[in-house]
Length: 174
Image 1 (cartoon, helix red, strand yellow):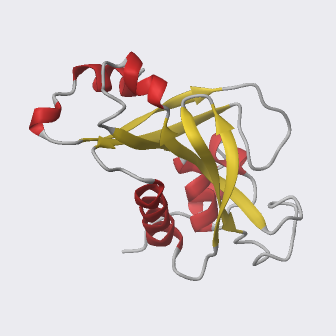
Image 2 (cartoon, helix red, strand yellow; image 1 turned 180 degrees about the vertical axis):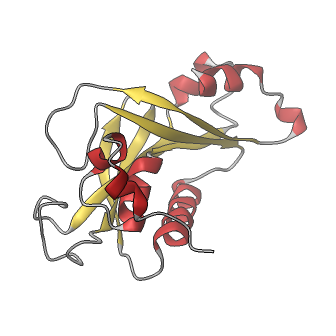
Image 3 (tube, helix red, strand yellow; image 1 turned 180 degrees about the horizontal axis):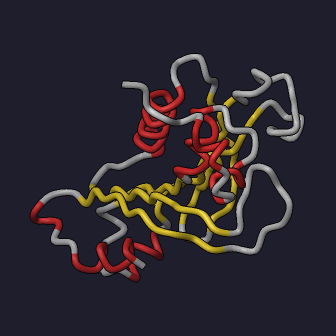
């Protein structure tokens, strides 16, 4: 909803639309060490003239490399999201097994970290934006999943259990 309202209100004579919107997401999910029924999400949106898939790919690569480091491999897989076309899933090589396969990565060597895609022309039209002139990309990432990868947490559910033993590993040393 924040992205849609922002697109409707944005004045492109003031420049391109670039936004980040954090929020909480709820979904139905079951026993899975890499998913939760409730999670935080950070959504990004860029709308301007001449935006391409290369802009999206470069942005996603920069995000992943900044957070996870150059040693992690990144993989883009075609996917489907209703508001983007084309859409991609972005995977990062597993921190636990180094890509060999384990419980965390479901024996694939990869962990899905975010979804993204080029904003569908119909979405632009519904927001009153001329899709013949403007294009853009959008992405959504879970900071919980990013923290899981960055700090080597095996089970994303640990973030919600309030176990002091788990939390103590993150204490700052001064």
